[in-house]
Length: 544
Image (cartoon, rainbow, N blue to C red; front, side, top):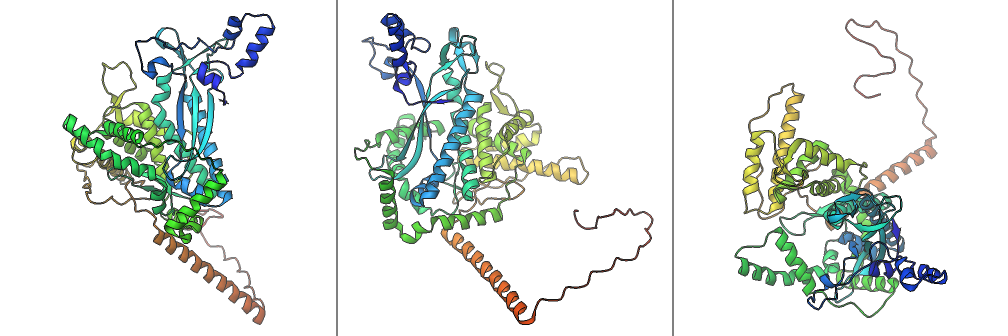
């Protein structure tokens, strides 16, 4: 992967060092047209100058893809309001997660195409060409922190032939895996933050009935509202657009239509870019003063301390264990209920969401996400239709008819949000897996005949079930009171330990060291009873 910052490549499809190459060719005696052609990568860029069209997309060819790498909101808050050292660590975590994600797209996703209709496809020869730019603030009226990177991926790449000729990437393949890349970036960022700062992550429900997002545990949730003012602007404009949609179509918008309306609301409320240029030091001072005025110095000054205490509370109740079988049923149920027919990249994105939730920032084994997806494909899916041109399109296909009887009403129930129905379907399949395992442990191969499905909640989120069972329900957030109670508990334990150590030292000074007990004599050898086996060095009731 090559990182560049030139406009020649992304603007004209020419070599980033085209000026130098063209100048050398002219000095060597080439004519201007031949010298310029030597700097063009692949076919020359042709702009549509026909007066019949005014659309920008038809006039300007597609020269690259714009990717944005943005961590969760609590990471922006920690980056903006905590100390200088933590800021540098979070920026390092951002660099590593971004580069690892781009490397995955380069190795596993990117394909170059040629011949008519792009029927020949292969891996790129020398990797992707990417221009990376970092921004620090959002477009809100009042400047707010928003650490994010823009990555412009050039559509031009080298073919794997002997000449190394240039061609275009398969754009549909790249765009198909955007969500899977986004979930991988989030997973990598969480792991880097937890490894370098010792923090933990917990889910936060943004919209009732929708997927929760992972946030740093212990960060005061009020600061998310202080930081995400653009989201509030979008949410204020969204009801008007939704009402127009319902009036035009006669029904509420679905998942895709709701996403499109959200993008439309974001475009309508997007303020112009600022003309005032401030350094990052000045911006951080402004942000810290703004948060202090809004919520007090105690909330701002103790962010890092509360994050550490919340991490201890999370690791005390959560066991980061990945069960591939349970992960498979969780992934396939969620994807099937929310999408119907699906492809492998949908499963891959959901598998990475599952790992992010279960591990809470602990590192995952390389290839574990692909292992979960393969378990899903092998055990729970079938081709969606023989008429489809691709065999990648799959659908949920439980082998047991009782599983189908449990899942079918959930997939057809339209009164509950899709993600809530998906969670119920995942719980139903997970209950079947637990029942089969329980029967195998008891020595019985008979499958149970009934499955109890938990009822959906309407008024409030369902609590999480954590631990080795690997449940996936919504847990209460670690609030400020919980963090404070955990911190006080640890401080009391530390004071008690220090008091005990002081008492031991005082007794040693007053009475001298305690006499050590004499070593116990070896017990007499006894005769081994019939039917027993004696192994030297092993004791009963424990693990050697």
